[in-house]
Length: 179
Image 1 (tube, rainbow, N blue to C red):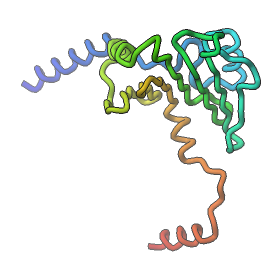
Image 2: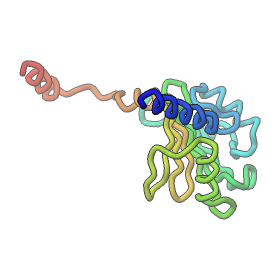
Image 3: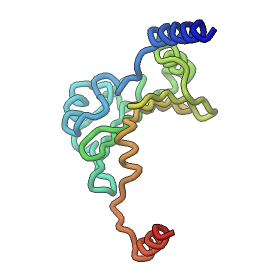
């Protein structure tokens, strides 16, 4: 009985893995992990994003973070994209955020396409759906935003801080360590 169950489970897993693709690590030629310069070069090559050059790049409050914001709705870009953001940490692209044009495409069409390509999401809520593996999180958020996140870099940014601990925090931690 146990062998039959194991065989059936293995067979279903194989069928499922053949039917769904790995999660994408980006959109078009823009891939997570690219450097700031590589991303700029690809944005220049692809007018779909509406990238206008250096004025679209800004520094975030941390010295290690940069952001490119593009606007496709100005008539230079895609009919399906509106605004896009590309976030960098230590010169690596780790989040791609794409706002879609709600007049040209709808949430259900994108959701259905993603389910057909990548299988059922790991999380569904009224705010959206999330697909995730060890390396990438892809989320479709309402009203119509698609995000690609590099999990390892994202986790690193959550543990990163430019702020030094205060004397009170240090002594508190020393006290807690002695317990």
